[in-house]
Length: 309
Image (cartoon, rainbow, N blue to C red; front, side, top):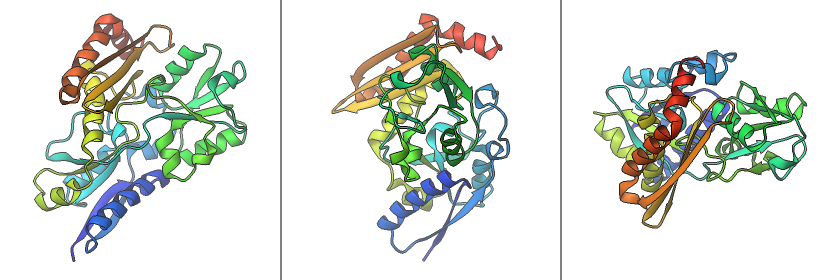
């Protein structure tokens, strides 16, 4: 009986996600044992920096990847949206698990059914510039306010009245068993998520054949195609994962529809496009869509943001 070690961040949500992956692996391989190695990342230590002001990537993943490369673990579980688009040499994404929820949701102390029901000048807690600009684009009177901390901390802050609402990924709320706390969910085609939001990536060393074969059993090809197409938007636009850029790919039969946007920091110059075509051409469609966004003014927006403007 072989024992495998999985590296992950040590937060409540990260552990829940990792345990879900372990459960699926054991269903398929009842004779294996898997132990968890918790890693503290820079993002876990730094609870004060506003995420959209970061100029580095891998804020929540690089230390986990380092542990994997150092042989301290056989594989690692990540929220796929946190992984930089450029992987460290020697590592590979052996599986992208089936994604159930890509969308964002709103949590309020008292239930509401839409963003229209929020009071004028309501304070909306979010750690994401992508979410903040979409909130401002929908309702200019609302006030997005930076918020840090894990999901539990953020939910407590809104329940204690520190914020009128918070925006979170639905997937995280559902994985923690907190779906009933959600007031409403946005349609991902309208309020566009972060690329690969809601998907779990299982990362391995490229040359570890045995672990790659084990993990590959978890790969969901439709989710893999969709999330890689979404991440291609980031690659082609050459923007960081904290830029006000969103992408969502939806596969319907043999076709894929990709939605994406680039916005300025105020949500005023909001450039949104979509493209459809054969699912076999998902990456090329994503590249074409990203270039359309850049040519429509997105390049200038990203340059101003990069330069602090």
